Image 1 (cartoon, rainbow, N blue to C red):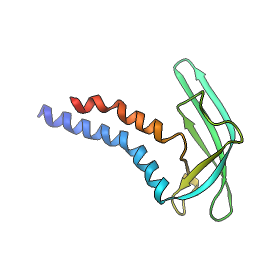
Image 2: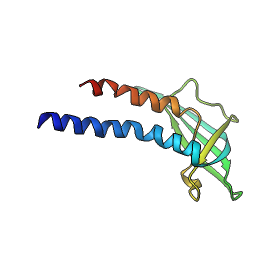
Image 3: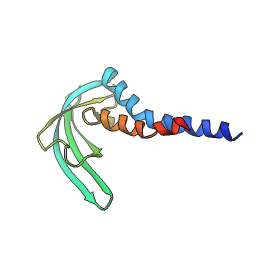
Image 4: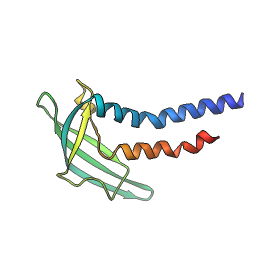
Length: 120
């Protein structure tokens, strides 16, 4: 019984850890792409809360100007204002666009943090 619970919990945690990188990979290969530009950048560095909020502007496939916000778990290597970054979104959902740069490394690292859990 205890082993079954531990295996179930491990599978659920792995699912959460792998969801973001799999989603980013899927958008990269099958989503609609656009070139975005960083129009806002705010570094948050208080206590144990370290991240950068960036605002990205892009034009979707229908020609409409859009803005998205992204929270990056980095403070030093985040893109500066004016930097071009790739974004992707599902067809018909440009309001749910995601920045493709800076996400793969972060998502893989978060998944690797759960690697010791697999040993147990």
